[in-house]
Image 1 (tube, each protein chain N blue to C red):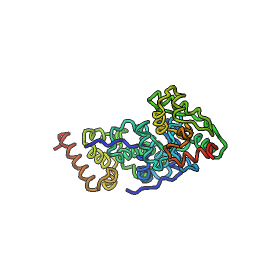
Image 2 (cartoon, rainbow over the protein chains, first blue to last red):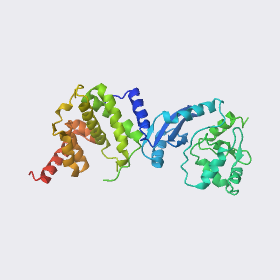
Image 3 (cartoon, each protein chain N blue to C red):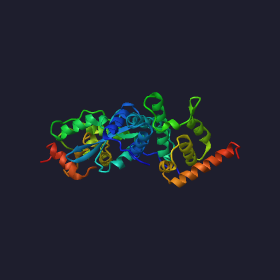
Image 4 (cartoon, chains in turn blue, red):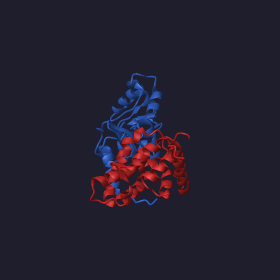
Length: 189
Length: 156
């Protein structure tokens, strides 16, 4: 069968119309940052995922499984997140003001992420301290698991959570990214 | 046959967009094809949740595209249908509608082959490509589908 190449304009027009039609479960796009390309995804309710995964294909499969198979790459639904991320990386923004779609079944996870969202720019806290603020003082390890599964890193600042002795411990995007974010915020010298 | 999970729409769209656009350009010309292209994939998006499995997705999207091309040609008689004229229309019912209904009970591959061959008049090479098999396999599926239909209708 002879193909005719779809022009970028036609392609963009369809993607925009699809979003406009309200038939898309999850829209996503890649956002360039100093830490590499991020995959940012949003539902109609808000940003639902930021991923460091260099293989968008894998993340797209995952989004389809979790949120519905009508996943489509389209820039508009993530434009606001893109703008705010740009500002953050250019030291022009300290707090994010975005609608978030947190599809979390466990009340504990939700509670911990709410507490996490309150950790200010340029400061760090510890896993134990976060457990304490979530009224589960002995759940530091469980807090670590919630951080590890944080669906929206950077915006929900799990990079600000470190070990009691100041060690960086771990980060979904790799320790060097955690360090870079803390340096950007001036929390590390 | 084991179930094939429905893929993310993005993957499906990227895999099939050029084939669909090529099909539409040949049917109704480049200008009309651009609108028809968008409409085709919007219809696919609308019907996406009704898919039970991912077999014959290419045949599925080409069937939608063929329908959109016919609608587009009907709406704009001045924009002449390049090849679609040959789709026979009786009592306002295009031939493919009756065929699709008749072929409803055929196994999926045979059904797709029969509808694409006799409803849309696609050459076997294109049907083979649509079904992800060969020209020969498409010819075999169509003829076995027709045999089965004849038997069902008591024509042999």
